[in-house]
Structure formats: structure tokens, C-alpha cells
Image 1 (cartoon, one colour):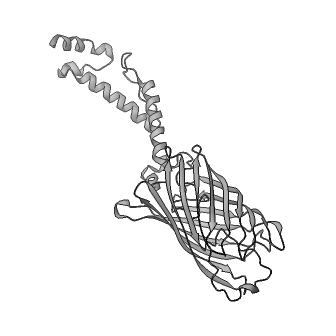
Image 2 (cartoon, rainbow, N blue to C red; image 1 turned 120 degrees about the horizontal axis):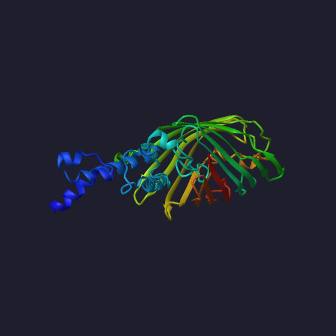
Image 3 (cartoon, rainbow, N blue to C red; image 1 turned 180 degrees about the horizontal axis):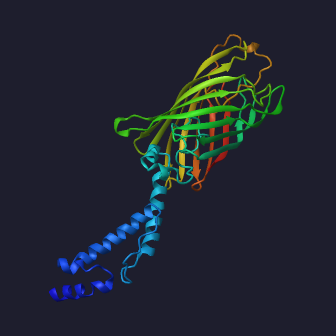
Length: 354
């Protein structure tokens, strides 16, 4: 055994290692040095720097292969860490530069796919374009049927403040005076207040303040300039289920009196990831959601003179499929639970990350 160690020590200079190993009479320094160099190469890969090539021998010069392996593993682990809609607060555990490094449609994820909006904001400088070009609202006792091209454009002004533009886009409203038109624009600011603390059962929370304008709107879709506020929550439940819910209030125009009044709104969704987190299935619903739904003009409100509560209730389900880091495709179908909600509410669309 001693003869073998002596032979290794004799060839240390040829292997490219310093002579300190023989001077210290430590036969294991050769392996420690090799490990230190591989660790250095791996670390340099993680911060996207070129490994130091000093004193590398032909026998132990694995830096190129090791760098490629480390880079691939780092990317795979990061993608897995950010993928899915469960415990999305984890993204903020990363260094800021790593979190902003590339577009990611999974985190924080699309807001247009289901009824509630998430508590999370986009990283600074990142943007989402979300579009539901096939949106259908069935007829109710107070509203005609409607086809719309809903959209939501989001931009991260800072890591905690998101600027948003939304609307129903180009649409068709039926009824006695059916017509094609463009729905008015809405402006929205989302502020992320705090992240989730699962150990204390505290959900993540964000606040949205928005205003529905009269810009570009016509008579059928125009309900005046109306403000609103929403408190958005995301909470991780057992069995990897994410519970997303919004509580808020919006001012709307009463179609009977023409006066403005404030209404309470509540929307919710339970969702879970499947198939390596590429597919999320959810059930969702709402009570009197007023921000995305514009009351169409009703020619004769007299049959409803004795009714004071026109709250809508609906429930349904849908999916979100993450095609890649930049693209998600979604769809949902819901049914109204009372006479004032659309009999059928269905839409499909996609979201793109930039």
C-alpha cells in the first residue's frame, strides 16, 4: 500500500498538482484538489462564468463536460422549481436576477384563465399578454347573449407593482338592438402585499385598484366610469391544492335608476397540477363579479321594478396547459346558478410571457 502511495506522489507534478502534497506527506491531497476544481467549475457555471483553467491536467481536465452537465441540471432544477401553480411564493426565494432571468408563464401564471386573480405580480420588466378570443356569455333574465374577445395585458413596473390593461375587446351583443362594437378600456394596478407563510397558514395577498372607463365603449357595453378594488389571496392546501380567492367591491350603474351604486364581489378557484405540472385543472365560481362583466343596455327595465338584488352566481371548471416557458393555453365552461347570471359562460384562450 505504501508503495502505491509513493508512486502516486512521484507523479503529482506530471498530473498538474502542486508539490505541497508530498511536502505535507498527505496522499489524499490529489483527490481533494480534484474535488475542489470540479466544485469551482460547477459554481462558476451557476453564476454563468467561465471556469478557471489553471493547472488542469489531461487526466482530470473534465471542465467542459462538467460545465455542460452542471448548466443542464441547473436549468432543469430551476424550471421544476418555478413550474406549476402551487406555492408560487417560492419564486421570491430566488436571487432577484435569477427570478427575472427569463420569461416564465407558470409563475406567477395567467390571471385570465379563471375567475379570481392571483396575489402575485410579474417581475420587473417582464410582461404577459393574455387573450380569450372565444368568449361567450349566454342570455339571462336581464342581459342578452354576448360574444367577446377578452384581453389582459400585464407589465411588471417593479417586482411588487404590476400595471394592467383589460377589457372585453371587439364584441357582439344580442337582444332587441344587437350590434358589433368595441368594449371600453379598463386600467388596473396590482400590488403584491406579502407572500404566503404556509407554516402559519397565512395566504399570500395582493391588492388591485382599477377603473373601468368609457373610452372606446358604445351604448350597449358602456356603464360609465366606474372604480373598484379587489383583495386577492392565494393559499396552499393539503394534497398540493391551491386555493385562490378574491374579495372586493366595484361601483356599477343601476340599469333601472341610472344611479351609481357599490356592489360586493367574491370569486374563488381550487386548482391542482397534473402530469409533471404541465396541466392544471380547476373548479371555480363567482358571486356578483362586476369587473369583467359589463351590463348590457336593457331597453325596458320595468319588469324588474320590484327586484333590488341582481347578484349573479355561477360555478364551473376548466384547465390551464403550459405548452412551454412562454405559452399557456386555457379554457373553462361555467353555468349560471340563478336567473340573473348567464345560462352558459364559456371561453378559451392563451397567454404569452415576454
